[in-house]
Image (cartoon, rainbow, N blue to C red; front, side, top):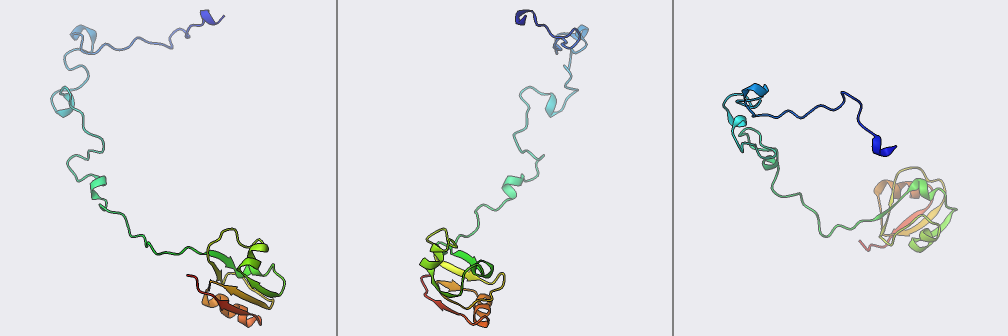
Length: 147
């Protein structure tokens, strides 16, 4: 029954009573050694104390980095994504209908992958390599700068 449960004999030992006389085996210095900072009452070092060396937290720069308040985050479409489309004219709304875009951010075409179809794209931005690859395949890229 639950009310009769006891720990196994020998698994629990009595707590050492430090500083209760020399007969106890832990009297006089109570296991703290002799002299020194750690033997004194109330002597504990603060968190992250490095023995007088400048602590790591103080060695770090006081202020964070720089964040450009005018940064415009674009939604990225790679050439490999465009390869799934059929040849023809595409603007941002057509790309959204083709499920290549998920957000309402400006669209930028990047040059990862290859394109073999003739695509006429109207987007907000395109990388140099992406533009070259699309033009090489017989297509064109018109940039309507909202950025």
